Each structure stands twice: as C-alpha cells, then as structure tokens.
Length: 411
Image (tube, rainbow, N blue to C red; front, side, top):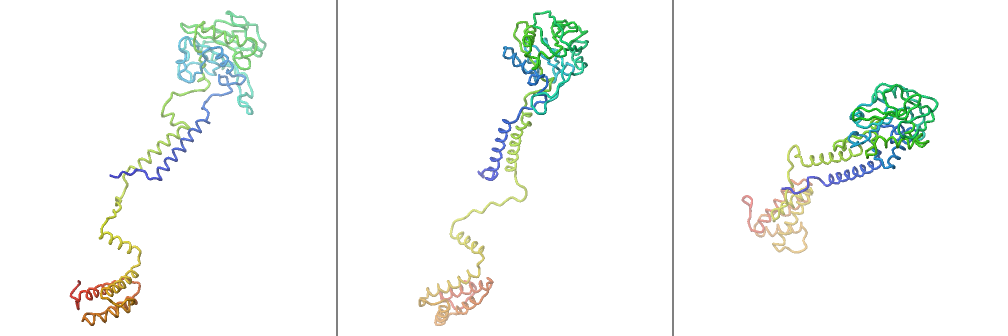
C-alpha cells in the first residue's frame, strides 16, 4: 500500500496559501464592512439623527430606563407582556409590516402619523437637504388603516391645546397637523381637531398622534415635548413594565432569520464558502483515479554482481561512447594477455601485439593480434566493426591462454 500523501507538495503549498489569504481577507472585510440596510438613514426612524429622525427620543427613553427595542424582524414577538408597538410615521397603510406580522394584532399600539418628506443633504452625511409637507392624503391613508375614517387638517398658527389626562402640553411652532371627523377619543385636542386620540377595540388600545414634531429631533427639546412624549408611554404602560418596540421594518430596516446557508452566501463570508469548495475540489482531484494507461512503477534497484554489471552496461549505453569503450576494451585484453604470458614491461599496444604474434607462432598457435590492433585503430566511430574486432581479440585471448590452435565454434 502506498502511504504517501494524496497531495503533491506544491498542491499542499497552494492550498495552504489560498486558505490563509481567504481567511485574512474575510476577517479584514468583515471588520471593515458595514451592515447592509435598505432604510433611509436621514428619514423618520430611530437610526436617524437628522431633524426629522427619532434617534433622540429613542436614546432618552432608554436613559429613562424604558426597555426600548428596534424591531427589524418578528416584531410582535418582541412585545412580550404589556409591550407597546410604536409605528412612527409610516408612509403607507398599516396592516402587515415588512416583517410579515399583522401589526394591528398587538394589544397596545402608538401610531405617529407622517408629516414631512425629506431629501438627503449631498454635502453632509446624516443631514437633510430639504423638507416639505407630504400630501394630506398620505397621512389620511395611515389614519384610515388604524382608526377608520377621518380627515387631516393643518393650521398655520399654533392652537391652544386642552387635555383630558394629566399630560403636558406640547410645543409645536410651525403648521400643526390635526385629526378631524374621527371616532378617536380626544386626549390632547384643540378647537380645530385632535392632536392625540385613543381608540379601544376589545383588548386592543390604539393611540394616534397626529403631528410628529414633538417626537422628532428638531422639536424634541422644545418646551415640554420631552415630558409630553415620556408621559404618553407612561400612561399607555399603566405603571407596569413593558417593552417599547419601534417597528423599523416599515422604514426598510430588516434582519432575516439566521441561516448557515444564507450566512455563507453573504459577502464577505462567501469567501469562506469559496475556500471550502476549492479544498473539496482539490481533494477529489487528488483522490480520483487517473485516466488512460496506468503508470508503471519505478523499477527497484536490485543488488548483486549480475545486476551491478547490467546497471553499469545500461549507464554506458546511455552515455553513447560505444566506440571509445570498444577501443579501450581491445587495449585492455591485449595488455592482459601480455601480463599473463610475461611479456616485457613497457611495451605499447602495437609492440605488445607484435610480441604476442611471435610468441604464438613459436607455440604453433594462430596469430593476428597486430592485425586486429591495426584494424581497431583505423576503424570509424561506427560500433559495429569495432564490436567484431573486440570479439576477435576475445577469442585470440582464449587461444593464447589455453593453447588451442584454431577454433571449433565459440568457446
């Protein structure tokens, strides 16, 4: 069994490098990226610090130890017992909010009618560039969806308010928006209509504030507007603890339910998903059987005299110096015969070959060493004739050493 890793070293290095790069990028981008929201940051919501925003009211209520919550999904589930659902300046009819809940199913609801249409300031982030009164019909649609028929009127001069409960009188300096011809029970009203009214339907209580200025950042610090807003929530809670849930789904701020799949598909966490897919692909590529003819394993290096000679021959053949090797072989054989027959020392190959021929003639043996040496010296680089001469010298050596004159076959 092959115990090697299925990954090549370069694949392992590439995989580790990609993993580190993607992990570092996901951490960097996660720390620098802002939370994506579809809402208007300068509009009438609890995230906005613009003139028409409700951030000031939200923060002050929190400091007054009210349990204030922004609802961005499953809003009704956040209410708990005795909670108040705050629908601050919706611009469409109220029924099912952006969370999919039936908002009118809450037991206690405070509805603040819309009044202003604002545009973002191009030079200062978080500021409004312009503000205009919305059509009265827009506020009328919202009123109709929560309290039935009624009309919206606006008065240029601030009226004198009267209250049916111990609620501070608000300060509204510009046009005052009031409700007229509605079945709302007046809580704070003037001769021209109702500023704050109440509607009871079974276990459900709905309070409607016609003019949002006392709740907005620009008017929140004027007169007794802070006490006016705080007293409204105190009266609706009836001196009992309860959450104040500001529904921000009506303004486009939403949080979806957590999901592993959606988490991995969102930027920058989709980089982690890409890393996982890349790793799985590399693992499959490394562990899948290859196509085509199977690769032959490398031949193991054998030990022993025969294998040593065979490996040496393969190396010599691979080098390609066949002619030089054969010439060297012929010279070595001639020198070996001279040594065995006690030839005089210091003779060259040609001189030694001549001495061997004379010695062979005296013994009555076949000669031819000098002629073979001459043919080898004159031969080209073609190994074929050199191989024949090497074979001839080999047989002459046997004849000289064993005293055989003439040959019958190979021996």
